[in-house]
Image (cartoon, rainbow, N blue to C red; front, side, top):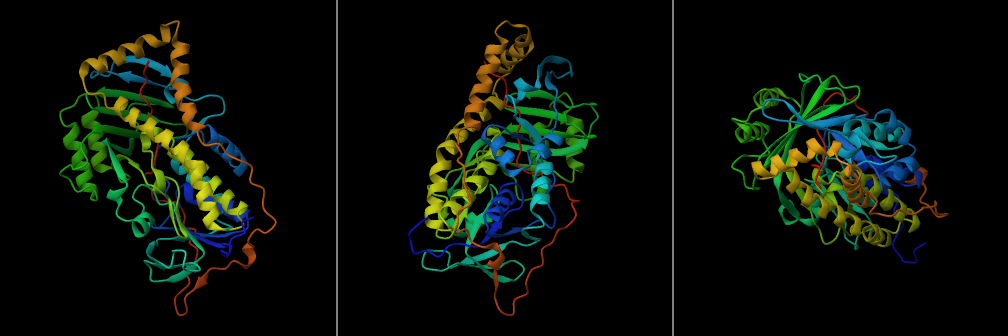
Length: 455
């Protein structure tokens, strides 16, 4: 227990209801805090693509009590293949090599994971949908809490605020400054959308590599449609308004214009897709993740880009560590935030470094390098050293997946009492009502493209 004079935190506002936010809310509630989650979207976001649960994140999910539910929703991918311009199969590889998975590692659709975490917390946690933070006041050490003005006009006060609102974090912008100060473009973009499964894929992913481009079409367990994924090299200052979906679709169409295989048909699906997503492959690099009573979590603090395959794992692990350190410190955020960052940062940096390498592997720049890669894919299953190559791939991924060690956080005797931790509402301001809206709108989120096999 900390001996400082800081008042123990009880009420915590979490911005973002994807994965990191609800996971943190689950742990905070168990420790006796009173979490509130605010989400800009009108409903729970259920779109997105495959995300990996491996390494430390597996143990975190076990301790959360959701591992069996994740297993039940596994993508159950069987493997993948590379095809040429004519659609002929160049080579096939099993799922364990494609995903670099071992033993208990699993994979789930991001929307399914978000649903599991929401269902586990909705009865114990206040959710405010269709709203967002507009202003944060008195969050530095001189104040006794954080006064939050919402877009809806409501004003409330919380002991702590957590930004778990992704790469383009609104919380980070309000407290630390504009995004450009912390985002580092990795030289590529990623796009994904849902389309008819015209290739008839069954728990299978099909790849087509082009110079500085990679396409993947896949359909996972229980899905009748397919996900179409495009990755391509491009500078950050492309001449398109990337806040506009029409311009995003135009960028994708212009980039892949004239390419073969199924590209024309896939671009046609992109034009009609209502869950179309496109964003840069970028890292978020910050000297510190907290300021006063505000702290960042997951991609908002340290986005490792989809190329790492570890964004979800780091979000789950970070939520466990942050809540555990707050409980261990008896709600003293000055101690807890420092310990949280100290435990997380080395593993985060390892995963970000891995992401930089994977982006380059996904967007190979020349035809001869692609040909060499395809030769390896075709011959690997027949070579006597295939197990050694597969082990090399897995070892690197597993090292990153286990880069953040976790501890046992026992509930302290002086845990804040959730029963008395009712957030304060400013007089004459309407109190938001938790909105447990049904899930209807597919919206994409972070995910994990398969790393390209390399020797």
